[in-house]
Length: 70
Image (cartoon, rainbow, N blue to C red):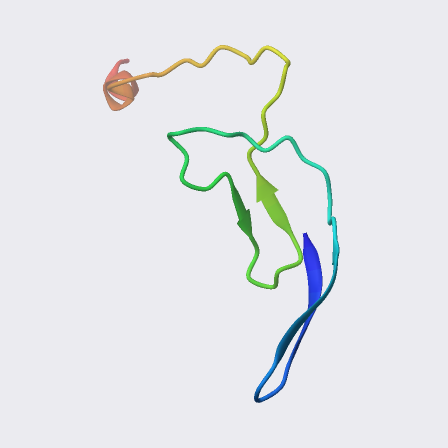
């Protein structure tokens, strides 16, 4: 959501609120925040939920030992 904000020394007002974009943000108890904003406020990174199956994940432990084998 976005809104214009106006302030003076003794007042604060918020203009009309606008939807910036639609997303299916991932709700998870393990994630404190599922999004981030660039420093200039112009871009967003959002973790979204998908209904498509994900690719399997392969975790390789002790991979440095594999580098030493001839």
